[in-house]
Image 1: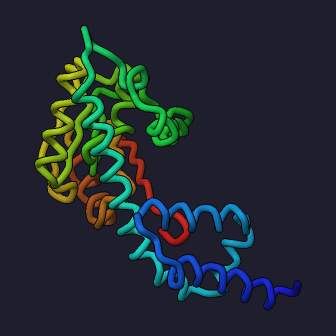
Image 2: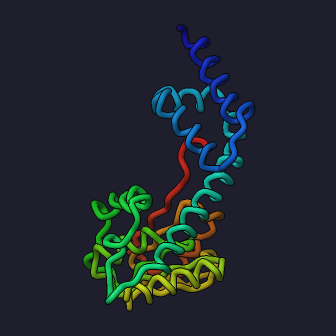
Length: 224
């Protein structure tokens, strides 16, 4: 199969997944796209995106599906945790469900190249209902203050519940837009994947945080 035939084959397959097939849930759509991506491999996928930039028109649909999937997953985990009976403080890694394990471990790379030894204040922007990255930092480090911010009051209320449920005295949440938050005293700021307007958020971090602040910006890959 030559390059043109190969591109046509994968484009047709992607059209089937994104246009021709009916997906009853956001998870089934994401699973189909992920399966196709694994089948074609990263080199073929990158080449296809480079040669056919119109494929990025699918990004908003996939972003919306991922948001719905993430929100549903977080809500399910929060409801499970609410039903648990704990006798004392607990690390989140000791009580999390198996479904959350991959998400929890995905942040492990930051511990290889960020200096947490001198971190007194860690801020997570766009924490959502279940701030897995912040919880991982809490479980694994001695950071004095772990601050989670989100624009949704309901999400912040769930984070406050988690902090109380697990006995995390140094973890707190606030309703705030990352573009308006005061990052004074923060040694590390983590900007979550689904935060919009990341350029403005980073500008605000640089404006208000210490000069030596370490910034992590998670971004969607491929089609989002």
